[in-house]
Amino acid sequence: MSECTHDCSTCSENCSSRTAPQDFHIEPHEMSHIKKVIGIVSGKGGVGKSLVTSMLAVEAQRRNLKSAILDADITGPSIPKAFGIKEKAKSTGDALLPVITKTGIKIMSVNLLLEDETQPVVWRGPIIAGVVKQFWNEVIWDDVDYMFVDMPPGTGDVPLTVFQSIRLDGIVVVVSPQELVEMIVAKAVNMAKLMNIPILGIVENMSYFVCPDCGAKHEIFGPSRADEIAQKFDTEVLAKLPFDRELSKLCDSGLIELYESRAMEPAADKIFDE
Image (cartoon, rainbow, N blue to C red):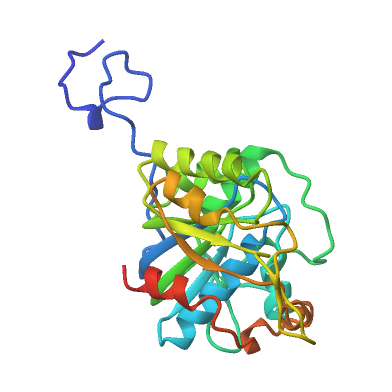
């Protein structure tokens, strides 16, 4: 065994004298130009991560910022559906090119590679994690101001791969106003802290419903605890999004870029001013 140089960057992963953590970050494709990368996470499924991801990308584009979405939810991709994308991603021979939406948002998702978008992705964790890495370093993300990474729920292989492989500038935690919200936030926040990734704040989805007849606001899941939870974890609530039938209809029709609402503006103001 060679003598220890005390420079952990020169030794192997299993070195018994290692005192510094190994850096697993990988670089994007050499032709990519990405300024900031934001992860959209949650401790559970069904809270609207993909919706928040899509809305932030649309809002960025409206502010003359060039945005992109890396859909890391390999087994449950929904981003192409929201944007009405039917075409497949193209290859240059040694790299992939993201599909560009009507307003210029660059998107890469596993559904853009499958012949049949209804085909199930029955892959084991390491393979899925490998695909996420390929979406980062084998796709040419040219001229991107803000990339949003739509992550699968929980703290398993893929979120860990994203946290370790991609240099995130911060994460947004998506929750819904239900009893388990504190535990959900705790899982996401604690994982981000372990990886030394800044927590930009919380977006509460399905926060309330506004009656179209009388205009009254109804908290269907009970009173929001988002502000209380945010304070406990030393972060802030970026936005509270309502139930909106118009938004659901536009997503189902692949027309999310036509949605008009000011609900996401507070979150965008915070994130894009960072």
